[in-house]
Picture 1 (cartoon, helix red, strand yellow):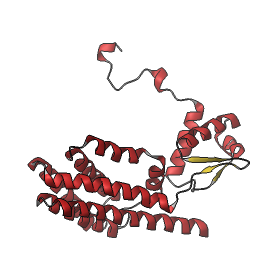
Picture 2: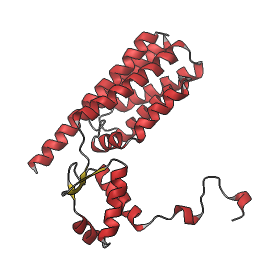
Picture 3: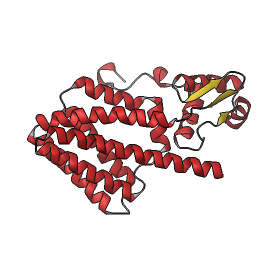
Length: 241
């Protein structure tokens, strides 16, 4: 394909092809995120090499790559295991996100456009409709919630604030937490989150910066409690098994 019509996002094949260790690492990470490999599970090179029909050296390279990302811990004289998720990690990361989202909500309440208000109101209304239906898709609700958070960050006018918020989403610890928890599977959680978002939307629309910040913090405080409950329940089931 001529360079002048090559899609901007397309890379040469040589740049996109992954090595065997990278493919193994991708597969293991997908298993970890899905919860099929539990946290703190030991990752034995011999067993993994046999399972995936690769050499131990390939598995070792894959585990080193995962360790660099923070998904795996390599322990001397023990080997490798899936990184554990400490309770402090959960609350520390949610606390940081709550503070950042609170600042964004405060700024939006102080200065935002009618178009922003309409978009946020529409997202919140969609969440309320989904929350009112016990059979609604949890992922659809989650998508609206993420969209509303992104909207607040973009409308805040603070580029650094948005960057810091996005950085947390790429951190391995945060991805492990989100990969292990299914926050919106229960309709009770969807209803609570929709109510929290309505409080944020109302405060911003009324120009009440202090109330908007407080409501945003409450939203993520409730989210943290929900994720913690899901993780503890999953751990209890794993222990019983």
